[in-house]
Image (cartoon, rainbow, N blue to C red):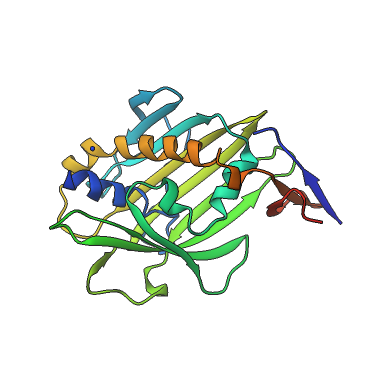
Length: 244
């Protein structure tokens, strides 16, 4: 038996930084540090734009900071999840993402995706390979996504630089017809990029992306979806509301 519940829901370096921001996932290697806690006191507020707040935090043994974005998005959770399950949606809301598709074996809970971020000359385009895991809590309606860099899952291209260490967490919490989203990320980029410059630009990219995400999730093609919850309270799928 399946239980269905609906919950009411800046230029070269800028381009480089936008690539870094979206190449992240909880670490798979034993020497790969985990993401900082969402509620850690060390987070420093760097920027606030309307409904979006961006925080950063220094990371030990790294010249690159982690960031946390918090946003109250004026869109239902179901719409956002409809965007998230579309393997090509990266091109619609992730800044400078020009290619994105699913590959390999996988399902709703554990799947793989390949994406490319276009870089202005003379910077080489960056690509990344992600393992995406999704889980949900039927009692709260909350959905969490972990994006894990798995660079060895696909052959590299001479024309692109593979980013191989990146950690990201998305947390979506329904709030009536709105959604609170928390996005935590830390990336160790490949190539000679100064940490101070990346850190100074870091805060702008999540703002642009979250603004785009909110707008994209309001498009007609992402309407009419619902979350399917199993009897055990686990999230099973995101499906069209009229699906039998």
